[in-house]
Amino acid sequence: MNEDRLGRALLRAPVPDQEEAAERAWRVLSAAYAERDRTTPGRRRSLRLAWMAIAIGLLALLISPAGAAVRHWVRDAVDIGREPSSPALTSLPSPGQVLVDSPSGPWIVQEDGSKRRLGDYRESIFSPRGLFVAATTRHELLALDPQGEVRWSIARRGPVTHPSWNSPDGFRIAYLDDRSLRVIGGDGLRVIGGEGRGDGLLRQGVAEVEPAWRPGADHVLAFADPDGSVHAVAVDSDRELFDTGPAQVPVALAWSADGSRLLIARRSGVELVDAAGTPVKRVRAPAGTRISALAASPRGHRFALIVRSGGPTPRSALVLAGERGHSRRLFVGPGAFSGLAFSPDGRWLLLAWRSADQWVFLEPSGRQRIVAVSNISSQFSPGETGPTRFPRIAGWCCAAP
Image (cartoon, rainbow, N blue to C red; front, side, top):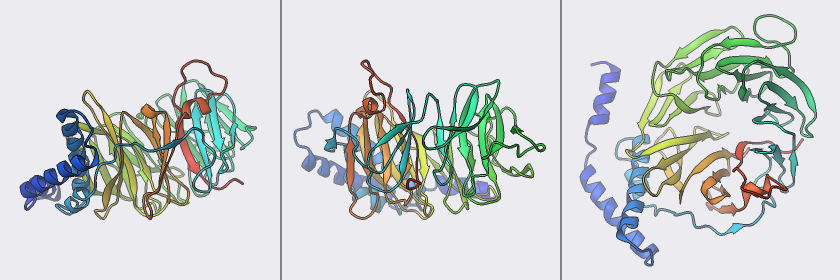
């Protein structure tokens, strides 16, 4: 029996005491909800909440070794996202700057809550130390300073999307020109295919997924194909390091802080591979749920995932997962969570709760504090009188230069 067949067999194998554990979990969750909210009307709503808890628990169970996570998710009561909130963003709970893509363009939010709009651009991303921002228009990639001054730009025929700036040296920027993956130097100089100004074509016909740079000075880039294959390429030599093979097209790609692991998030589950592309873990999302976003911690091998459930009353959950079997649900709420980012020191998570028009700052360890801020859409669309579109979190980077 080869390794893949053995892995599938192990996944199908029943977990010892799993039926008894599920029965105990149901009793504990039912009792917890009966105590937590006696005024909640309707048995159907309680059942939906309980099943959401079980779905998130199953995700934790799958990420961790068989049976180990049952202890974690059974003892946690499900939060329903009823947090007191501030009407305005007056400060960040951790040092750094948050980059936000709004309908009016990207904004930089400082630690004291002050904001600066950079211009009429579509997407943006920080350079590794937050000294510059890469931004896009429909047909341009530009490098800006924190005051919004343009340092250089390059125009392309197709729509320019998904910029990604490598770390730690900041010498490479990858982006999509329609379905072509291109790379340019952080100073606007060509880095593939010769000298002089311009950029270089790395691959054609790629999927519309933001590419992910592996941390380090070797300039390794991960990207996806339309058939769901994920590739890692050493950009400077154009040498392919691995290809995972066809699968569902990823939702997002992210490397661990030390570059030893790549997390591939697909709607139906997640896959963790090492730097050579060898699978470390494969996890299926529970039935009726899908993964919609992920973020990698700047420290260690922790990842945060947004898991959504469908049905007439959709709900979303924020799950913190680790390679060694530690996973837990941090926050659950009705509607859609649309994005997340770790603080530069890894001590806080910023969750975008689109359905509530809120940002929720969570401290995943220690005292597990939660700070919620309302009216996010209007704060990044000043002067608008009609409905505004909820902004996108583009990054949480370093302290102001």
